[in-house]
Image 1: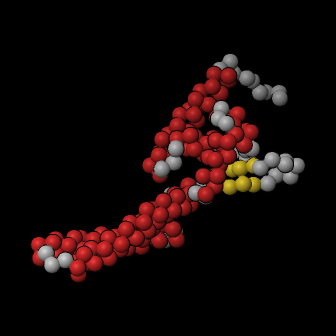
Image 2: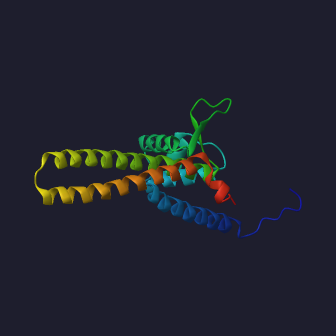
Image 3: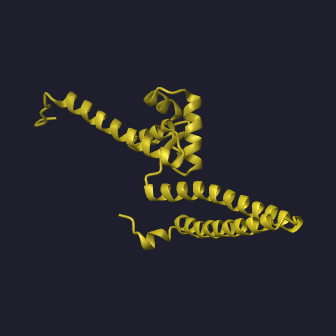
Length: 185
């Protein structure tokens, strides 16, 4: 330790460092709301990301002052989104978790899963509505209603085409082909 001089500001520097990291974790948490992830789960991801090493549920609970149940639920949600993975370390019996370090991979997985779910639902609803309207069209003798239905079926087919295009876009994201067009930095 010869030659190492401790600055009188060292404790303050650590405090400032921790404050800055906490601020960025808050930014991560806030941005996660864009993807339908609660800020508490976003904070959990941020803590795991900056921990530098895998953490147990107890470690996370201590760092975030949240219940072990909340930690478990949050880790499961992050794991389902491929943003956190379990890992093993010899000699440690408790489950260890670490964040996915590749944000591009996390984004493509998260974006793909969320958008696919909503888009598939929208396709299904559009198809069902078209089928229902076609039945009403065939049954009714009201020419004004038939005209209205025909126009609405065209609007629904336009929406359906958009959803098909969106599914193509989602596949480009999920397969990683997006990086052929917009390279990672």
